[in-house]
Every structure is written in structure tokens, then in C-alpha cells.
Image (cartoon, rainbow, N blue to C red; front, side):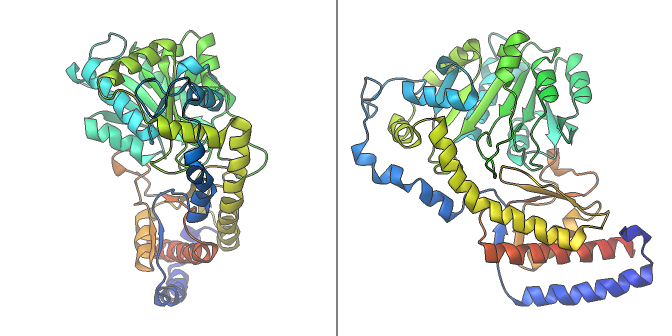
Length: 421
């Protein structure tokens, strides 16, 4: 079925019916917030033993007292642990405080103020541009807007960004300084970059020598199922291409232990690691090594982290599957409605051309809050008014069921309204 092929009189009749169903949902007075991808209470409880055992932690694990000054790049054991996350050497890792977003912000700010490895500081240039695959992560775009960096939108395809376009954009324009990537279980589409995309990304030949790939591997261990999707190691590929300085990798434990109170890490070439340590020296003497020691003792190694993440998956998976079941029941034969079926991560991407803003408005009127339509695109401009990001993690199953019912009715009403014009 395609709504554009339905007669106007029939659309008006359908609209009347759906409005009645919508009003019944409104009367329930339920409120559900699905604006951000936050861990729910049950997930946060998984890491509570880390705090309960804090008094027994070995704060001398690195040979110095983690409660005192020292080790500006982070505890040795924390660097070794995150090296397993990234698939790199421990000396190619810096372990910082709670948020990977904070590291990304710092790295961009330092490039603007001081340049990268001796390059001209970006704030002395006439223009600085970033490539922004979309739909993408709104916080990446917000960093660019905050610093006045121009954003170039490129489409996200089924296996990653449109690399033909990416290669063309950065090849001849020295003002293009970076690209944002969420390569595994991408926000919001849930896709994982193919091996071919990773290889092409690692082999980019940008005009700017200080061009950087911002590889935000936020969901590197966040599978919803036992069999994890494999992402090719971009640092290995970049080293083979002689492009190791071009890669900045980021991750954190924000959705493994505690959001904002976890541990974040940066991985790159030795040149970039040394450059960032030099910049961070003037900002703080050392990171919160007490928190790092607690995390090392709790997380232990990559295999134990994977076991912890299975507990998270058991909580999240039913919510994702409930969403797909209800959407399939409502729209399996409707051409106008598409949604992703991610195998991991925190988001589901819904596309309803020409109707996203109206759908979000209608859902809000019934008590269900989604991220603003357009947020997954640079400057909030979704030319097709199509994409809606769904964050299923926080609601209970009962709340999730209500929220999807509201979304379904909102989509039906918006489609009837649009094609009945």
C-alpha cells in the first residue's frame, strides 16, 4: 500500500478513524520520554557492585597510589583494558574522565587553538569544514555549530557513508578538516560500516594534512544478540596505508557502567597521543585514577566486559523486538514507512517522508517525547522531513508498548493529512 495512491475521500475517512484511536491514547495520560539513549535503572544496577566494593579496591595496582598525583595518560591497567576495546597497543591509548564527548570537544578545541602536529591553528583559517554523514549523531553536529565549523552533509548508505562523495569532498579542499563517524551500530540507523567502507576511510587522501577521521566507536561492545557484528579495525588498515596519524578513535563506559561517571578513552597514533598528552598537561595534572582503578577491577578484561554486556542486552533486546513487532503489524505492507532493525546499539531509525515533524508533534501531544525531527541532520535540516530517532532503552515494556501505539497512530494520522491535501 502507498498512501499517495489512496483516494482523498478514503484518506479522510481513514483520518477520522485514526483520530478517534489517537484520542483514546491521549486520555490515558501516560508520559514516556524517549528523547535520549540513556541506560534504564535496571542497567545501571548491573555496575553497582563496583561501588559496593570500592573500599577493597587495590589502588596501588599501577605501582603508584591511584589516589595521588601522576600518570597523566591514565592508569597503566586502564590503558591496557581500553587497548583491548580498540584493538591497539596500550601506549596508543589515553584514558580520561567520564565522557568521550568531552574528549572529542577538547580535541576539536585544541585543533582550533593550537593546530595539529604543527599545522596552522584552525581558528586562523578562513573556513573549517567537517563531513557529516546523515542521519547521524546530533551531538557531533552540535560541536561543529558551537565552534562555527561548516558542516557538509553526505548520505548514510546501508554499509556506511557514501564514500564516493566523501573521497571527492576531501580530495581537493584543504578547508575540509574532518569527518564524524559512528562506525558500529551507528546512531541512529544501527548499521555497522562494511569492511570496504573502513578500508576506503583508512585510505583517504585528503588535501588537508591535518584532516582527521573522528571514529566514535561508542557501541563497540553493545550487541543485542550473542553473535556480535564485526567491525574491521581501522587503525590496522590506516597503518598499512601509512595514514595512522589520520585516525582519532573514541569510546567510553557510559553505557557499560555509569553515564558521565564512567571512564572514557582516546586511541590514535603515537604522534597524536603524545600531542594530546602535551595539551592536556596544561588543563589537568591527571585524570580521576580512583575511578579508573574501580573500573579496572570491576571490568577486568574484554571477555568479562562482554559477559556484562550480555546482561545489558537481555534488558534492551525485548524493547527493540517489541518495537519491530508492532511496527510490522501496522506497516509491513506500507511503502511510506521504513524502520531499521538494528542488531546492537541504542537507537532505531524511522523514515516517513514529508511527515517527521508532524509525527513528533502528534506523539508529544499524546505524552510520548521523541528527539526533535531533523536532529539527526546537520543544522537540523532534513530535506525530506523524514527521519525520526527512537531511543527504546529507558521505558519499561509497558511504557514501550504504549509509546509504539502512539507512534503508530501518529504516523497514520500524519500520512492521511499529508496525502489528503
